[in-house]
Amino acid sequence: MVSAQFKVENYVANSFIVVEGKREAHNFYIIRSGKVKISKENPVSAEEPFSIVGPGDFFGVISCMSNHPRTETAIALTDVSLISVEREQFGILIQKNPAVAMKIIRFFSRKLRDFDTAITRLTFKNSVEEDPSHLFNIGEYYFKHKIFNHAAYAYQRFVQYCPNHPNRDAALQRLKTLKAPYKIDDSKNAETLQRSFKDNTMIFCENEPGNELYIIQSGKVKITKIVDEEVMLAVLKPGDIFGEMALLDNKPRSASAITFGDTTLLAINKSNFEGMVQAQPQLATKLIQLLSERIWIAYRQLANLMIADPLGRIYDTLLTQVDIHRVKIGPKVPHNFEFGMKELMKMVGLPPEKGEVYAVQLLEDKHFKLDGGKIICTDLEELEKTVNFYKKKMILDRKREASKKAI
Ligand code: CMP
Image (tube, rainbow, N blue to C red; front, side, top):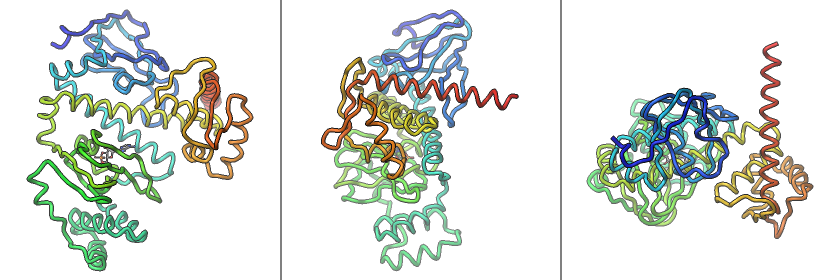
């Protein structure tokens, strides 16, 4: 049993265990007995409005492991007994019980994909392709943009995974034009776990099946996705992990990975993944921290998209940036953002003409100004209050809508 080394906490029915928005999230819980209701004040579209969890389940991991404010409230539905795990104890927990780590990793991986899918739908009004036949379209995108090495990679994988597809001949023709071989020679990769790539090389392409994850040893990796245009999701650095989603939930790659400078990677495949998690708890800890951070950010992005008023979304985007960088919020605490109005409007997804109008409105708020083109907030507590105002307004609007429908 895990419980011997960890603190046990008991709660009577109807008590609050975790409260959404609370900034100190130093621990998470595993349920020993009883039932707990997990909910969010503003449920996002990718999730059920609430969930009920029981013995063996966990909650509070995302905020604890990412060291960000709580994103959900947990209430005891019955008398409950919980194991409380401090952030620093995570490695011990995994050593004692690697199955818990695997359960969390799998659960998080699915959640991240659900959130990513919902964000793509909402921001780009685009469906999410999850089929290798889409590799042909990726090839066409890169071909049209004259990025021929990535085009060749996508066509080669398309021919490999969709040998009977009607577009196969077109792909082969493109490869001929590009003077590229029809097949990628993977034989060397199968033998080694250490992989080296030259600058600007595609490691894998979105929609390609995948059964390895990677740890960056040197160099950088861009994570990109084509949604009408090529969108950069992240730039990863040594020590970072990527490619875990396809490995864990048996779906094609959710994005492409492209080197940014010469890069070396350590590959971990399905068969040695569980063994690696057991043998190296720090790897599982790092992976769970990374997934928690990404889920936390994705959740805040989704919650942001639920705010109808663009000015509300602007304030909330600023507060999210403050939280991402773990800046302590207090009265009269100022903060200099690293970006100006144009970048902010881009983050919020507002076109330049609309963005200008809202930039003027933001600067009418006495707690905001520009310095050298960058945004400054002079009082973070006021920013937090303003965001809370917009969130409360959203809840009221939703209740009003619901009661209108009920009449
Ligand atoms: P996988 O789907 O296997 O392949 C693409 C990888 O990119 C994915 O696993 C994650 O590791 C990574 N990834 C996907 N979305 C993001 C994101 N929004 N930010 C950073 N990395 C991401």
